[in-house]
Amino acid sequence: MESNKELGRLLDILGNETRRRILLLLTKRPYFVSELSQELGVGQKAVLEHLRILESAGLIEGRTEKIPRGRPRKYYTIKRGFRLEVLLTPYTFGTDIYEPKRPRATAEYRQARELIKSTEPIETKVDELVQFLEEVQRRIDEAMRMKQELEEVRLLVETYIENLMRRVAQENEEEFEKLLRELGPRLPKKILEDLEGF
Image (cartoon, rainbow, N blue to C red; front, side, top):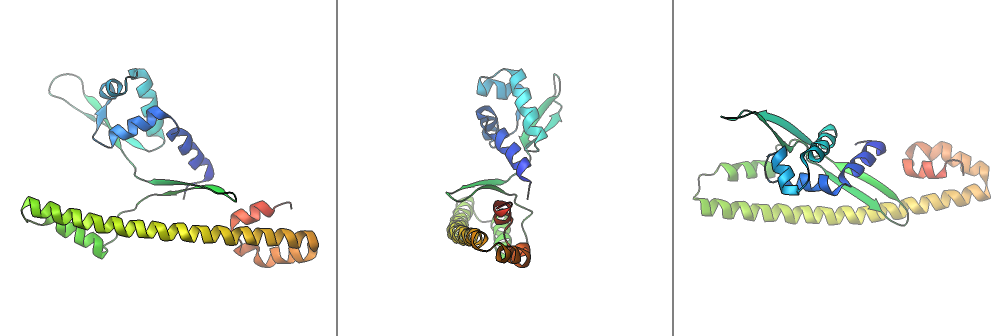
């Protein structure tokens, strides 16, 4: 997981509309600078600066290709896929990043590979792939619902623990210090930070 400072930098980078538009275009195909400039209606110098920022963050990469006539062109593509989540509730604020790794050899992965390699007629193959994709999406949606429910339960319990610890600290400082010594290593980092200096 990336540090809060790195996540903050990433949010700053993605906060720029032109950079988001560049990333959106690059999800469709590789582009070179003058194409991006034309598509966005932004000068090439500004596009180059945005590309430099995105490249330094590791979000895109450039590769130079020779063309039959003329100078080589540098094409930009998405380098790194990830999902960034921002969690904001009355009790907490935080960010988390998930970067997909190489798929493990799960049954789903093997099934996807078999469907992709199948020699069925194209109509049948696409239909089977779409059905498989719908099932995968259904399972992802279910997992996300479960994750959301568990996040809400976690936040409820963390908030209760923090409030309870604050009440103990106000009523009996010795007991509070004892609890911190015994349970401190097991308490969530956020609770410890919030209780620091209380």
